Length: 226
Image (cartoon, rainbow, N blue to C red):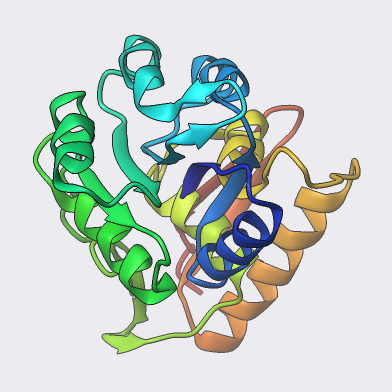
């Protein structure tokens, strides 16, 4: 799942990008409100973590514009402005949550997950494909009812496939869901990650197959009976 982080403090931005990435999210980290609006117009982010004191003004003033591009986007304001009037002003401006600095990264991750579960951003029910299942709430995969561990890229690719199981997923969708703006993506990067995911699913005994659709993308289906 791809999130937008708007934070102009280099140390904090880098730290949050790494911690959210370790939690299984793809994070696009930007440093000003104007860039955030352009990014939201181009990419279907489900949630933005938004600083207030940005180089080009108060981040809260960007909420309405972000919602024009993405009406369902969740907005979590992260700021050093911790006075009650500041919190009320941020929430009244449309923020879904308001968290003050210094922030505990674990609390931030928990609030991100909670925001994504709220009505309007409702989590779909578990999805099954053969003996592989995926629960979007905790983002947990199971094979034959046993939880499995996947590397971050494997999780993101398989999540993208399972959310669209038995349908062709275009290459561009993977690029939007699995890789961030600042990542150097080679022409064969996606293919290499899919190949490793196939091998991992085989090791785990998942009875599914990832079909390449030439010139388009990939599709996940049940494997044919032996």
